[in-house]
Each structure stands twice: as structure tokens, then as C-alpha cells.
Image (tube, rainbow, N blue to C red; front, top):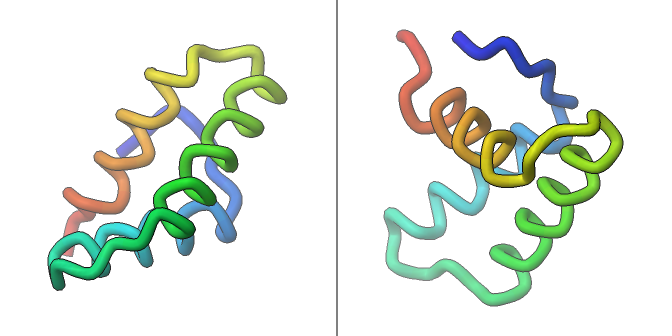
Length: 65
């Protein structure tokens, strides 16, 4: 689905944030952890943080059954 390879930990973190968001209980700590992890992954891959974030959300939120 995505050309970007994401570590399992980053996918799990985004999945947790998405579940919290849907339940109306997303915390600042979770949101900050996701953003920090996205930024670190983007920097390590030499990519735009925005592109990494959008691809990650697509993988988590629109995963094929």
C-alpha cells in the first residue's frame, strides 16, 4: 500500500493514536509520541515529515482487510 517501509513500533503507535482518537480519548502524550516518531523516521529516511505522516495514516487507517 505504501512505498515507505515503517517499523512495526511506528505502525503500532499510530494504530494506538487512531483508536484513541476514534474513542474520543486521544491524549497529548500519545499524539506527541506519534509526531516525534514520525519526525525521527522521516529524518532517518531523508524524507519529508509530511509525506511520512500521510503514508503512515494511509497504512493504518485504510488498511486492506
